[in-house]
Image 1 (cartoon, rainbow, N blue to C red):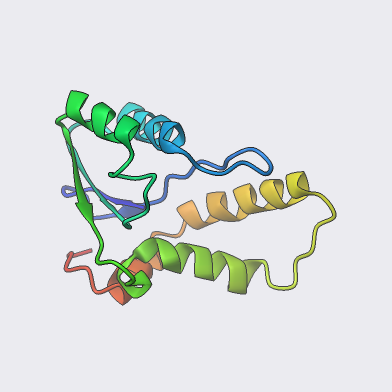
Image 2 (image 1 turned 45 degrees about the horizontal axis):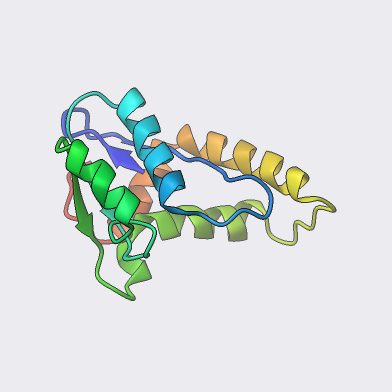
Length: 138
């Protein structure tokens, strides 16, 4: 999720991995590169303390080459402080409850559609930020 300091409007960027793939540092780098291509100027990334984020050697090396990207960690074991948890909770419990596709590609397609729809709901994205008590004026 992003918030422009000028427009103060939240937006959602996401990347889904292939079937049965676990995220690795290279995937984080790919996503950061995607963001750099879509968001002009410096950015601050707030993320959980997952090992694939800032503690991965390849991610550290990438960030060292891109000083325009600043990172900050959410507190450990504090999912309520992370607005992305609101994104996933809303998607899982409000849009996809009891959804049981036969194949993972069906799940990916449906999830892509739901997240794409959520991108068009800045009011809902803002509510996830407010719930996380991140002090931003939206």
